[in-house]
Length: 318
Image 1 (tube, rainbow, N blue to C red):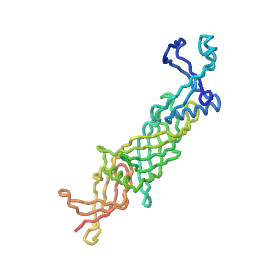
Image 2: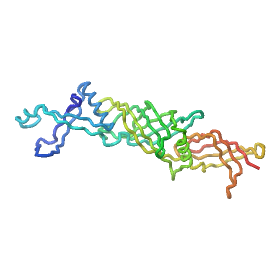
Image 3: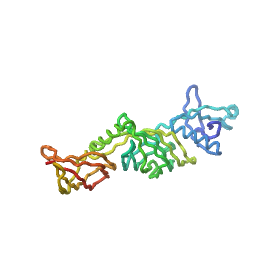
Image 4: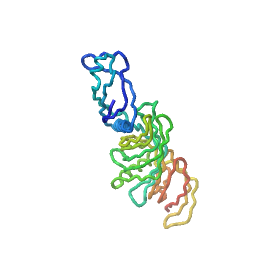
């Protein structure tokens, strides 16, 4: 077999007795890709890259000596070639991305968000489960999409990848910049809906873009770019900040027509996302009829997964 005029291995029929009849013939073959020189290795690398990035490779099957058990036919067939298009991989190489943890910290000065995450990656090996890929690092240039709108663009470079089993990998990156699109209105909508989401009604978004991987596989080093990624992701939010328990309240004097309060509270976060919220207020209301009694202005509130003990300062109106 040849690709780009370089030998890349061989194939032969499964059976010693093959009859070719008029019309189309389906003949099963087996064989090997073989890297016997730098040229053949480079040719195989290009072919594998095409295979993984949705491109067709035009491979040539070249008849060699003894290509058939009939000597007269073998002499006549020697050197004949047959073009065979090799279709691309019919599955996404990166099958899924699942977030183990995520942190969102918006900038106070520009339209960016500091993003950290731990991700579980499922990979479809093109050579089968008995020949997994050994991925060492990965780059990603992806858009985060909420509905049909872009929240922002994320670029991560050379993040380390750890293999957990034949198809499962783990990666982590810290303090990468999500560049928010447009006015930031889609990001604000995403954050509002994230705050209100819960286990029963999680929030969903998509990641779409391109990736590249560096590592090795059965034929040698692996360096592939242009790998398409499109994955749906779900997150559990803060349940509308409804799961807040007040441990203690103390009065710290008057301020105009209000009393200053110090509030010790616990905010529960049942999801896996750490989030930093800025410039908002929590209102204190009477339990039965919802009458507003006061409010707690907040400049910055950082909420981690699990229970968050916080101290807040607010006001109760006369």
